[in-house]
Length: 553
Image (cartoon, rainbow, N blue to C red):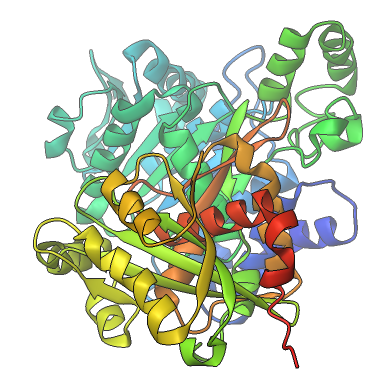
């Protein structure tokens, strides 16, 4: 009898409407199948079904009941993707797995089952497996679920010894241990598997650092994994936000990641938060581990209170109050690219401009936006100090030297960007090409002497507040990208900055704020462009006729 392929089975159920999922789950299964068809990765049905069979035959419920787990189709598809999709060497393709699913959908028990499989059948001698959380009490939740699970199965229990601080399997020299945050001490660890519980509650830098420490420690293993499970939460700027931004960038096609597997079960339409059909997108186990009647009761409570509604959105819809997701589709940005643009083709044109100055020693960007024949042509010039060029190239894996040769990057100053070079770029536009910026937008943190120099030379400047007030501009720019009216030529540095943008969305009023997908990434080029679009919008009634750049007579 041939092995089942639950990835294809689940994808077909999605396609035919037999199961209801959100856009992100639909996207990941399209990506998985396309990757298999294009041989980016391969499917080992034997490995996938081995893991499923083990879980269903050896892993027991640990609370309320003690019978064996029966995996639902969506869970079988996840297990198949984790253990069945392999690289050319036959090792697991995905090393980072991020599962976001609403409360009461069995994610803790599922994580415990993954631990069990990787403990007893993964074939890694001397495996070190950690259940990680900010406090030991929280780390113990998955750990205890695992222990109670194996206690119910004599064959597994006989192999395992419960010690003071861990569970030890002598036969394979494997240890499973709960672990509270200690980034310094974690440096010496060599994990085969790390399970991060409820990462939405991990605060700020501490959670980010701990995640990176454990992730970097995986390198010594043949096919390690870091598994993060969570429901949406309330903490901002932590590892949950980072994973969400990275995950959605991957799902939108704007990421080069190949080892990340994001499975984001969440609703698509916040306005339908109290619709059971919409709720299925965040609750794949509706009707199995949690009944529709439960949601009806919770909805009735949430409809009477704004605070209860916010709690419902977070717990059962997986909508974070201030969620951060990747913004632009790769295809839309790619559509804006093409042959090199030359300033000579736009002699005598009017434009709007924007500046994003580096607040440290890093990267500065200046952009102009020229309208002609219904298109928006964008020229962006970047500036970087000399002593940062080599270091930034190595640290960021960005070929700044190539961009300098192409002319889109100016090496400026030794240790800090010389803002006189930015000023000279604008003067050059005016004097050499007769290109006239009608307004120059800048953020209020810009170097005031640069702004003063521009003003003294006759440039009109205006400061731009870069917060949620930009929502209409972001929507406008995205719309122009989608309809093909934005052109950036072959400026691949600007292209990368557009793809590095995420938006933080307030679920209360849907207002958006641009942020980085990852802290180490740059979005300076995008910010300078949106500054230009901001002054265009603000002064449009005054400058529209000039901006049209219609040929006269």
